[in-house]
Image (cartoon, rainbow, N blue to C red):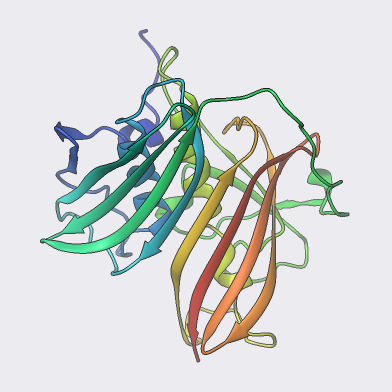
Length: 268
């Protein structure tokens, strides 16, 4: 369809494929940052999803960030078909640069079934009309609109916040549940690290060293990337220089779209 701009997420999922090996010759650049973990996780899910039937949708993923990724260095995703079942398929994905693993992921895909559809009422939260636009100044957020609480005076976007993609995630006819799940995976890695910091720690780029260690997402309900969603993240533990957080992604109607957990390293 002419006149439709190819989205950034669709570009991320444009692989060179050889069997179950998916390659990105030159990972998308930025402004001097290392590769964003949420981007690598989104691409790993996209590679895994390319090996399952279209009627099986992302159910969950569990990823470990092993090494920092580099811009401009070939990125390869090796997919292992762990199991194909009637209702569930399981895949293992290893992301490599220069022959070294930088991410390991297990992803599960599930054929939709009719059953109970319930979740607890969402907690009292930041209202969209009360949130203010926020620009964290990162290349990874250029494609997003973010609105945070008035009290967020940090250089980052600290949950709870509202977020949406500026553009459609794919051209008409190519906007699949997998593509949208990859977009959601990307978004869920924004915010957990700041939320995982030890209480009382100033949130500034020059304070300590922080990095994501692992990340898990459960996909509950359909996600529309260009619609506003509220991301709630709460800290549940700090020990051994590690902070654990639990997150929930809600749409404007208050439906729980996805759940997340992440543990981050915080060395002060």
